[in-house]
Amino acid sequence: MHGWMSRAAVVAMVALLGCDRSNNEVQDGSIRVDARTSDAGAADARVLDAASRDAGRLDAGFADAAELDAAEPDAAEPDAAEPDAAEPDAAESDAEVPDAGPAVCTVAPNSCANGEVCLGESCSCIERLEGSHYLRTNGTVVHWNGPGRVITVAGGAELADVRQIYSGNAHGCARKTDNTVWCWPTSAGGNASGQLGNGSIIANLTNADLFIATQVMDSTGFPITDVVQINRGASRGYAASNTCAVRLDGTLWCWGSPDASGGGGGTLFNDGVAGHRPSATQIMADATNPLTGVLEVSVGLRHACVIRNGTTNRELWCWAANIGGPLGQGDQVGRLYPVQVTLPGPVDQLGAGADATCVRIADAVYCWGSNNSGQVGIGGHTLPANHDGCINYCKLTPRQVVQANDVPLTGVVEYNMGYLNSCARLADHSLWCWGNITAVQRTDWAIQAVVGGNALDNVALQTTYNTGGYAESMLYMTRDNQLLRANAAVTQLCP
Image 1 (cartoon, helix red, strand yellow):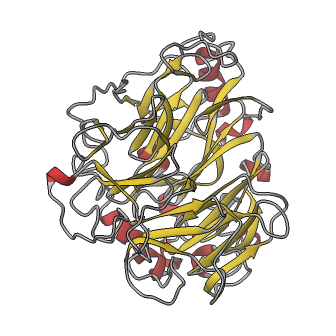
Image 2 (tube, helix red, strand yellow; image 1 turned 120 degrees about the vertical axis):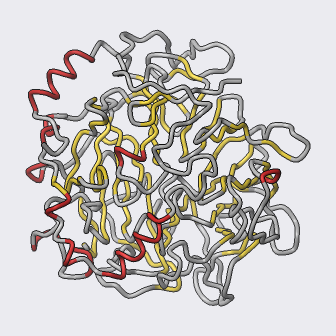
Image 3 (cartoon, one colour; image 1 turned 135 degrees about the vertical axis):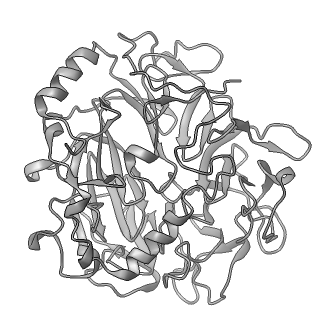
């Protein structure tokens, strides 16, 4: 057995767990109405055992980078030395999670009290998950991985009025309703690369410094303002010692480490100055002009990408190292300045990961780059038709993610990049993933996610928080308001 379920088994489980659910869902902390549903018939897609990876053909350069991240999977979490360590203050249960049944709340109008949000079946005080943090509906932030802690500011008051959060390596950041950005350390190394953006670099912080937010500054010592977006998603939460912010004028400003891979040849900053940046630094379009038109940003292992308005709306532009082809240019030549990726339509979401990039366009996902673990999701990665004869079975240009038998994956409403894996939430609330499942299993194409024997078919929110396979690194919220790490319940700290 390799941890996969037959079609009959999945259908039987869905029949047992399923019920007549509301067609409302949560996306990016707001409620929307489902547009499409997707066939889940490929749930019996074959999962490949790690023994068949033909590891001898993998490039040592990428393997070294992967090992660098895996060596300290929980560096950001001082209270969780191992990714599966029990949380002393978070009540957990390995019992099977039952479905709550028919809808008990409505989205429009919102029937939930106390400012909570309707997830589709139940009300919740959590509106967004990002790595090791979640955003509560009252605008405050909780670091959940370990004894739950509410993020504060100096003096002990809770960091309030937050609208967007991001989890990085040993730090987190938030955008507030006044369009300022605040960051905090989650372990002693939380400002060793200038991750806090407050103008300082401190190699070893004390426990008294942790989980206290300070404001991000520019190089002149003034707070950056007019910020409309920070890093989207938690795809780099396991190694990203940097954060970026998009300002109202469409410019991009970043701080922290120039290269999350620890020497992989990429640089986030392109202004000609080397080293860590303890304050917000502007990203350039060329030697003399700043990058403009930026809407969203994602930072990968040693490359970065943005959605921007250029000649057309919501184009994708990428730069830095190009090992395995994550820049989508048909080659492996690095670029100091952003270059456009040719895609079939406007980009709705993006994720820059471990030498791979994925985007959601409408209800489909397109990926490219290194594919040694199936993280591009286009079918058997060793097949000549699915790679370009380069490092790590890489695919140098975008291809649509497929299910078994090359059936395109459609019906996607939200996408999340993990470490050597990705997951997509469909309009029918099921979660489909590809790439590494566990340390010893992978899939080269999208399959319905099964965690602890349970098919994930009622998901409202999902994120990843370490370097494990998706079954080991996933945090998700069901539509009936259960917050789960694998099948273990995580205590919700509600206001």
